[in-house]
Amino acid sequence: MKKLFLLGVLALMAIGCKSTSATTTKLDRSSQVNIKGTWTVSSVSYPGSEYIKVNSFGLADSKCFVGSSWKFISNNNKGDMSLNSSGDCPYFSSPITWFVNKDGEFVLKILNAGEKAKKVRDGYVLRVANQSETSFQLLDKIDVGGSMTDVVYQFNKTN
Image 1 (spheres, one colour):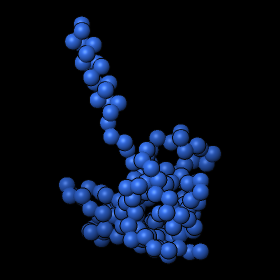
Image 2 (cartoon, rainbow, N blue to C red):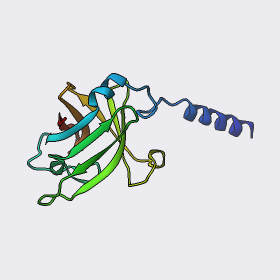
Image 3 (cartoon, helix red, strand yellow):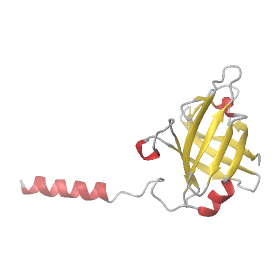
Image 4 (tube, rainbow, N blue to C red):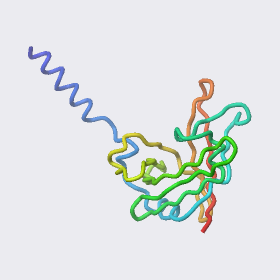
């Protein structure tokens, strides 16, 4: 019985000591302030994009995000995003919460109207790259035939 108790305590300690996740690390305030504003996705690219489809953020084909509008508010980590309806692309609009952690990871939650971010369990972690005053990229890793590749979302500032 003592052995079972000791194993249980060790298991709890191992679970309690696991490393911090992307959502619990410190924020990169300067990256967040640089992302503040309204942005448009000007392109989405990845190797083999002419042959495979990527369902971005569980919403639509990645190509539907070209022309989408994103608003980021850095002082409260809120904002919104919307997709334009065209061809096979659905219209979609939603509030979001977001932040950039010290590891350069962009953490995003897409919310339903009136929903609190803390109630949303699912989110997305992307890497911020090539950030300037007028543009930045978000990189998402996907598995294509057993090989990890980047989906690159190119954002350009609209205001």
